[in-house]
Amino acid sequence: MGGSQLQIPLVDLSHPNRAQVGEHLLGAAVDYGFVYIKSSGIDFTADTIDDLFGVSRDFFLSPKEEKAACAIGTENTAFNLGEFSSGSAQQSLPKSLIPHEAELSQFSTLCHNLCLRLLKLLAIGLRIESDAGGENWFSSRHESSAGPSGSILRLLYYPAIADHSTFDLQTDVRAGAHSDYGSLTLLFQRPSQPGLEILGPGNDIDKTWSPVEVLPPGTENDAFPPILVNIGDLLSYWTNGLLKSTVHRVVFPANSKVSGDRYSVAYFCHPANKTELVPVPSELVDKTEAAAASHDPVAGSASSKGTNGNAMTAEEHLRNRLAATYGWGKQDDFTQD
Image 1 (cartoon, rainbow, N blue to C red):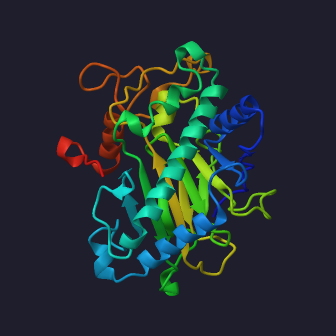
Image 2: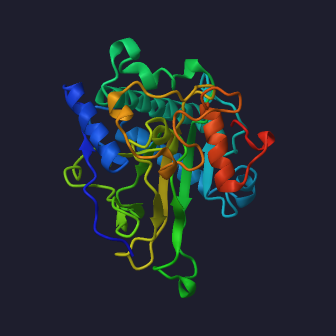
């Protein structure tokens, strides 16, 4: 069903040479749009991640009627949590999640802080001069203090196949081909639950689906699987396509008879809504020759204008992507969780 596995780079943030780490991270973003972040040198612990997966499992095992009012999709297989304020959710929580509000808030904060750290390293890799904003160029536009954003923590559940008689490994998928909308996505996975595939580099004819390992070589004995990070449409747009927003999907692993349940947790990081997506002050971005329309046909390039004639805002970019995907073309269709 998929091709050979890609050698997605593994980055260790505990390395003392930040310039080298930034270059390594940037290289992965340019070549693949995906990168593994090793479990060492970050603020997450195995217990923190295990506990959140336990909370997620309990939610998806809760009564159907409880999930129906808040989960995504007819099968109630995903739940979005918007931004928290002073540890409190800004939305109604289902019964099973109410006791874990503080835990969910803390996990969301850890995710956001890691994204800020990665954005600083990408700015270092892009060699943004200090007088133009330096390593804080991206991160300052993603800080909570900059205002509300489209950032979301999502709990995901892909149930095992109930009816084996109609299952076709070649055509049935758990999540169809898509790219992510924001700046960065963090994906947390379980060791024994593979299934992610990405559309590998190459021209349109040569591109094939390649499976992504949960535990790449060198991480088998780590405290927990590396966090898989991918570039979103907005950050690709912002850098005129230099950083790749790679199409991916979730399938039933070909090496299993009929896959069991798969749980994952994703954090989608966006800039503050009112952030203007002005050109990034980097010679590496300036030299990018790829036409913006080839990687983001809806939004264009970072020189595109928003509805008021100024640079497009992060909120406008997100609204455009939602409109392209779901046909949400009205102002009322865009809601901030």
